[in-house]
Image (cartoon, rainbow, N blue to C red):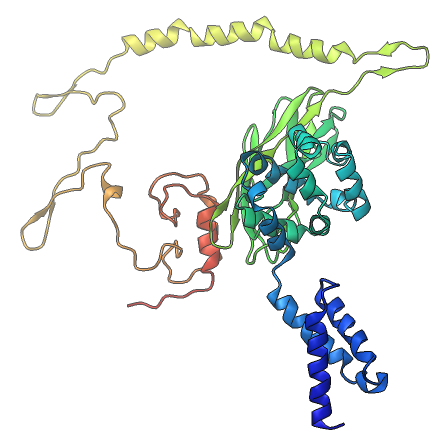
Length: 465
């Protein structure tokens, strides 16, 4: 085949592609052009170029064509700027990204929702009723929900995220306890909960506390979840009377936008209603920046009374409650406590016994040291070799002087090597406030942000000047 004939064939394909206005997509246009060309040239000769031409045109057009999210944003930009849409849309987008809801968002279902918006409440029970009313009554919103391009976008979580970025409303990350409601097991039994992150982008680490009622539950253990990627560094859990706190950091960002951060196990101490709540929650990205987060707590509900065959209701045995009340109201304990606190002997001893002056060998007296001041020794000036004196540092001022560091702040122990030792020092001082060495970023609080900075510089070595 001559070069002239090849050029003629290519020009014909380009012309056919350019004048074709029936299909909208690149591949369809290319196919339409090929069909036109097949009427002019032999199918045998045309088959040599079909694959190459279609690939070139489809690639060029795809590179030039804006994304689906961009096209939707530009098409409905005035609608997306309305205050009511900006208020309601973030929660709607978060809900539609959930895997169980994504499985239902097929074109046929979306079409049914556009015809009957109340169906959306069945799929997403937590959706705001105001959004349902907009779907019913607002013509602009109704036009949006009936757009076939939107139907395609809603089936792609990545596309939903891209649209949220274009709208500049963001989809706020959520950290919640699953399940949201638990019927209390029997006293002595154990149960587990999971702390789950959803809609979280580029997360490297987290810190959080789970608060519980110690009269109802006893913390047993915890286990790292699967959300963070790589070799996760997790500090030891900080266990207190009514809460347990955790912190973990990964060498790389999480590959997913949702997953289990950790699981916890509790033992039931009493069958009572209570709340499992989250506090001090922070998700941090690869740049050491905390992400905005909303939290979702869980509730423990009392077990329901059991009905037996003769329709009589079996109520919980009152002996447990009675025992608890008796123990709490035993007069002996109160009397003992009051008696011990008001022992006259102690008060009389402390009031009547006074320190007497002591006589010295030369006939003088030494006044006794006031109580509580025995350890206060005034520092004396120190003589130097050249005959001068060095005045002592006043008490309480040793830490006020600024000490110039020889290495960056993330080399916490200043051994010129950033490693696991620095991570342990930061995690051991979590929650500490003030200008301490483990406050790497200098915001007067030791938290996950400082830990992230250390992780970002792991393996670095600083030579001596």
